[in-house]
Length: 133
Image (cartoon, rainbow, N blue to C red):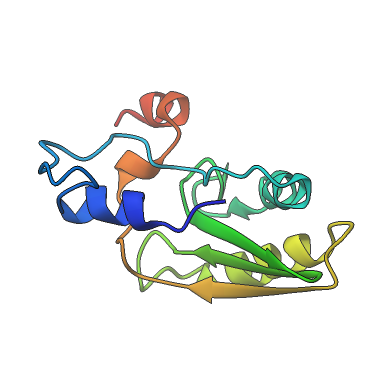
């Protein structure tokens, strides 16, 4: 699991832990680094939720920023491709349903954030190449 600070630091161009300024943001900051088996299952379940306009799952699109677990509750921090995303409600509902359906999860909530703002650099590199980015 991640706290998102490294991705946020890179996206905002802040100095890293060593105080050095990042020369350029990392290209693919996509899926969060999950080490907990339940979080891994949640991430796998979220791969079933697709952006209906692009036909690509929300994990490979880089929309998932973090998965936090606490006593059977899961909190998925994510974004959308834009604040005006017409499929936003459908995507958020699908993410909550899939995360909540995972064994070991009693309740799931979605934390929608806009920082760091999503860019195509967050897309999985293979998918991004296929899309021409």
